[in-house]
Length: 504
Image (tube, rainbow, N blue to C red):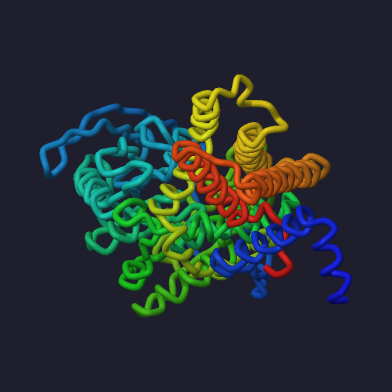
């Protein structure tokens, strides 16, 4: 065996070096990233009934029972700033009505949002308010949930002073990311009577994001290397940036004493539809609170819609629950509806090594790409200075260096294009196995060809050194820049799983 390997190395040194390089890159990629595997969720929730209707309340006003009036006004917050809001009131109601303050999630910020939800709930005898979300404390890299909570708390206190709103029967309706804000508001104002969560992540965004990405990719049929790379992206530490993705709302949920209603769609693959209510139940129990009601809606998406139509039973159930409080707070069954399908666990992620994490990882990768790109014109210029009229002659060292650099840059472009393709297919719930698998094979093939061309280039340069061919200092510097950049790009491609590994 050893003799055959030695014979292969002597007869085919370039091929042997190429195989060793690929073996090294595969091992490097497996070692350099955090070890993580998407774990199946073993906990199963089987609702005792598919009937989601809320029982136990004395008041069951159907959706559509009242006409709705809409008022657009501006409210002044405690810090002096003003926000436009939309207030909807049920017409013809005698006495005070329950009130709901809507809390925005990701992607919504206007007072015109939640028009269908607010219209439906108001028509069941509930006064609603939708305020504009201030974006001073909200961006891609920075989100201050406590500051946002102060805004909603101000809106809530203004709202319960409005004509017709019962200050003792008013609460919050938080959607998606708004579930990181509602518990802060609920624990800061004693008059918050209830909280409704729609598609609540419950877990920190880093953990929920890994679950969502893994579920999307697994559903798509993405290669294991791509799925295993999730913590290499989501596990990044960017210092002061993106700190909100580790925000733990459990600290506030454990202080809540209000009744809680949680609504999920079984078609929503991005949320911990099983673990979320379990974590919420545990957090509420820390404060002796057992008033948790959970409802699942068949095939509904993140916004409780099926084929872009709001699920009417979800609005009916919310209205019945709110109107029926406090009797509906502990009404049985606590869990009802369709069977939830959370396939994998939401869990903590290990962080990448220091050299691949945060801004440093990005700088190193971009430096490699930059050095590789700039080496191409530098190589041509250096060889022209030596009197070569054909610096891009593919049979020469300069040509081999530039071809290898171009191949590596092409591999980076192809890899990025494949990642974008996977993301688009996954987020649109589309399946295309030939494109996913074929694209993966093509991407790996391009990366392998680039690695082979780097080996060919290095052998050509080594041969010239052995033949004692003189190289000016400038040429040696340019060659060093090219090889350094190429090495960093190779390691970057390996880190993201584009070279086969014997172990993962």
